[in-house]
Length: 170
Image (cartoon, rainbow, N blue to C red):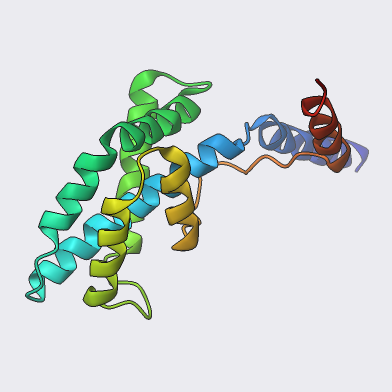
């Protein structure tokens, strides 16, 4: 009986260790994933609306062209996060899988949004100032909350307050 209990404790401990060792996604990586989800949502909406007779591809392509450096940087940030503890090939496969999962999420549309809504969102995104902060703002306003392949990091309150105090020093 005692051996069975010890075996159970050892098994439970060995299962818990990988979960504790799992890396979390920092704020920059989460924001990159939000930008990626926003981009994919707009891409899928463009395709869905085109099938319904409203061609948004000109504005969508203009958005991609205007924001290419920030979109590329967001993708690279995600790949860097996925590469931690694995190989480049594994990270790229995970990145591709994330893209497919996000695209599938929007395959049936977005509740409460129609093609004319997406036309306005894409036009605003296309004309927005370039840079990651602007895309993060748009993504967050659109409610982007991607499911990530790991937990999000949480900063202890004391550390966050201490970081603010240090940052405020001359």
